[in-house]
Image 1 (tube, rainbow, N blue to C red):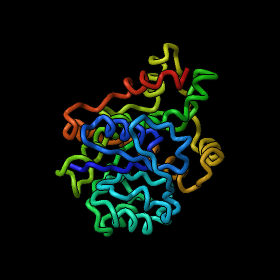
Image 2 (tube, rainbow, N blue to C red):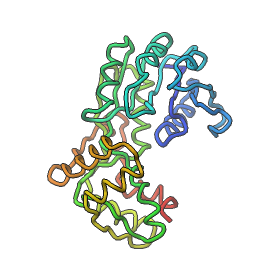
Image 3 (cartoon, rainbow, N blue to C red):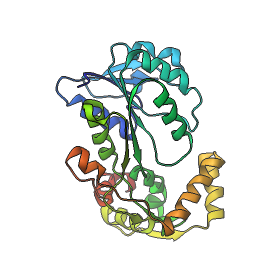
Amino acid sequence: MHRNVLVTGASGNVGRHVTLRLRRTEGVRVRALTRDPEAARLPAGVEVARGDLMAPDTLEAGLYGVDAVFLLWPLLTSEGAPAVLEALARHARRVVYLSAPGGSFHAELEQMIERSGLEWTFLRPTGFATNTLAWAPQIRSEGIVCWPYGEARRSLIHEQDIAAVAVRALMEENHAGQRYLLTGPEALTQIEQAHAIGRAIGRPVQYKELSPDTARRELLTAWGNAAFVDAALAGWAQMVAHPEPVTHTVEEITGSPARPFRDWARDHAEDFR
């Protein structure tokens, strides 16, 4: 069992829950890496270390005495990763990397981690339920979701389930060298997701189909990365005919089934009201 764990991205959607679960695990010392400790607002009992993955020379103090690391990479490229992994390998034995299925920079990071000498586990969620928070401004103001590919069917996963698997992978010895495809328990169309949010907040939410060209213009403005936008649009188009897979990996690892999207929507209802 790893007793000293460093969590990167500890104030984010997944990292926050990883930190809380580790804090409740008896005998575990959890340390959060953050660029701004004063603003981190982490729970009592969590050690906070100042450091930035984009500045590897700031990581040594945070890594001192650490056995395992939960790694959430902050960029859309693998730039700077070799130096970070060298720093991790000088201190830790294990890394649990929040990756993704398919190509892109995640595949590059995985290959680098495999060559680093670290013991590793890769978590590959299909899609984060929290991504639908992008719809919140539309839903709050107009009760509508304007989005492309409404019939795209996704097996979105609750961030709590990703965190639950991450903590098992950090704490237990039988996850080394594993690549876990993590999903929710069902695949819903984006239209069905919007309606589920409506039920959670107690008022109807309508779905309005947005053309891919219009969506691309709007997403380029919002995201600023053309390759990322094009990959997202191509992925949603693919999911119309070929839904995202559904696995039972969360239940197999944690003993509890993955939470359905309707539960996530209830947990986040205030974000949409």
